[in-house]
Image (cartoon, rainbow, N blue to C red; front, side, top):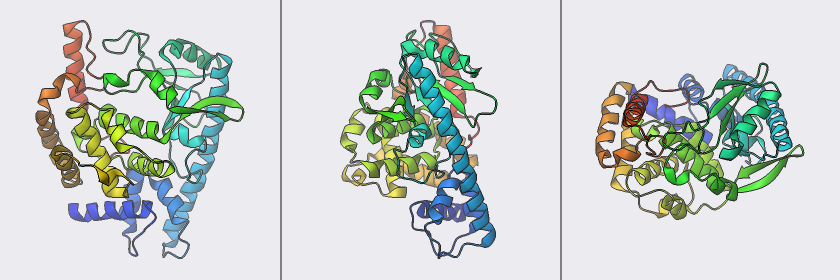
Length: 361
């Protein structure tokens, strides 16, 4: 059963790459595409193969999904434009990331191909309070709000704030620094590695493909803990592959941004996974360490065997025990209180063992 599931996973990957196998187990493919939130990407790709023998009910379903997501992305684009205009009027030019960057038309895919769960927006730490107030003035409501100085051990930073508004297509994830190693705490790096752009006359910053890939690595292996948990985020791996085709990526420079040890092992595992699935140019030119190769093998072995996940996660934690101070999503920046810090570490460990979230395989 598990080998069959992994074969279906590889068939889905091949289809997303534009090379669909002649014979597909459509029920399994559709189920995996829905689970991994790549169903709209699959629908967009298969429209380029009109002669492919796709069952009528599958073709109808995929066409409906693509049409509805195209409509939703149009609404999200209008929402992003309004948001950027609101922030511009308050002297703020945000950085858009992940799916929000896609909405600016910077990625060469169909308008409905990318499924978004929210709009990821970055502003400078000193602009967080002003940005929140501006969005509240146009009808947004705070759904998650930790407050100023809520970043563990660093009063300068503010944990992400989630805002939404009745009737909108998606929520806003407002941030002032990515989760992950402390070396990425300077938001100016993101601004320097972005292009100032316009969306319907509103100003915002769109990161280079290099910076977007860095953020996707930070998001998946550090924030979501995919390295510890042995999970695939196929949607983001596909994003990395698309981004790597838009400009030449200096993979040696990218890897050098992460410290040797746990950070590099986690990043190498993700790059190796993306390359193994989607064949990324340049990624095969450097040596992947033994731990990264072992962790990629673990991902494949664990696929469809979720009962083994906790044991394998514990094994991974033990292999990185020497790097324990920097394990969590906040780069190891400690609270001044030992009690707070102990609670934080326990909370982070519990989070690693939580149920598999939506979008992960």
